[in-house]
Image (cartoon, one colour):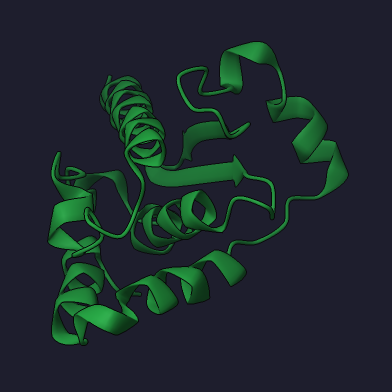
Length: 143
């Protein structure tokens, strides 16, 4: 299972012209949640209100293993791609191995100039929310 640094390196090693294509590949790999789970996390407190795209996140841990679930509409492939990257790198990892999501993730991925400013604001809001949710779950699990 690749960690976040492995995925960042993957983006940095490809030609700049293909980075957006790689992000879209990740978007296609975001798993579709079963309806039961979608309905549960589509509660207002699970939505990232700062993002124009209706993004719903749930972060839990069981037996010290992180579980992240996300619901992002297919018509938002950029956001789906970023969420998919984070799930691939963090979901299912023991909480003691969880890496901090860098505040400059999009820059490290080489995507900051490929995404519009409104979308950048929304993705940064998602990243901020996800960081906070992970810290809360990790803290709770360590009690």
